[in-house]
Amino acid sequence: MLIAIDGPAGAGKSTVSRALAHRLGFTYLDSGAMYRCVGLLSLERPGEPPATLAAGARIELDGNGRVRLDGEDVSEAIRTPEVSEAASRVAADQGVREALVAKQRELIAAGDWVAEGRDIGTVVAPDAALKVFLTADPRERARRRAVELGANEATVLAEQTIRDERDSTRAHSPLQAAPGAVVLDTTGLTVEQVVERIVGILDRC
Ligand code: CDP
Image 1: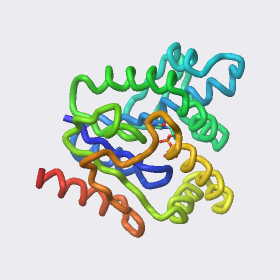
Image 2 (image 1 turned 30 degrees about the horizontal axis):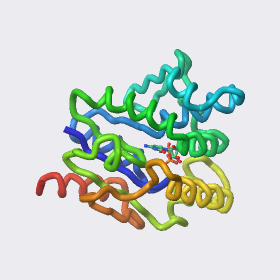
Image 3 (image 1 turned 180 degrees about the vertical axis):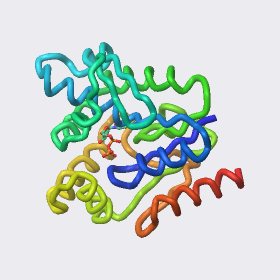
Image 4 (image 1 turned 180 degrees about the horizontal axis):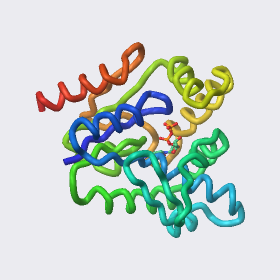
């Protein structure tokens, strides 16, 4: 069984997905971490096509937020603003998407998953048991992310706006709610309240 959680940056996807997976005893898949790994590689090896980097990357996710890339722990290195920007750029490349979607489908083929990203309900797992599209007011999203990173809120809002725009308007798998997705606005809600709502929806499924 798979629960798809999609939405823009700072909508609370990671925290909610991890808490939900824990609560249900499912495994958590952070698909964004994979795009971040390819973004990091593209900064380190700018001469190589991102799709080649994506196809060759050995990405290991432990489900608790630790990420290894070609054997090296990059859990912190992939969270910088530079890598966020690079991830969003390489994520617009169809070859990158094909390589990473294939890796994701291989992972989710067996077991129970809460998978988080931008295109889980639309592309990776359109037959998900439940699809949730998390949103929140852009200012609140920037505020949350600024607290998380210890960064300036106005700077985060400016970077977030560029990334949202690119993610939503790209030709391949643009960020959008999947048909049949439950749209949940998390503005003003705590993580626990969001998790409760999703569990409530699951119970009624
Ligand atoms: O944590 P945050 O929402 O800021 O970003 P993320 O989920 O780690 O994803 C980083 C970037 O990867 C996004 O801005 C997207 O461009 C891209 N991404 C994607 O295209 N498809 C996914 N399934 C997940 C992430």
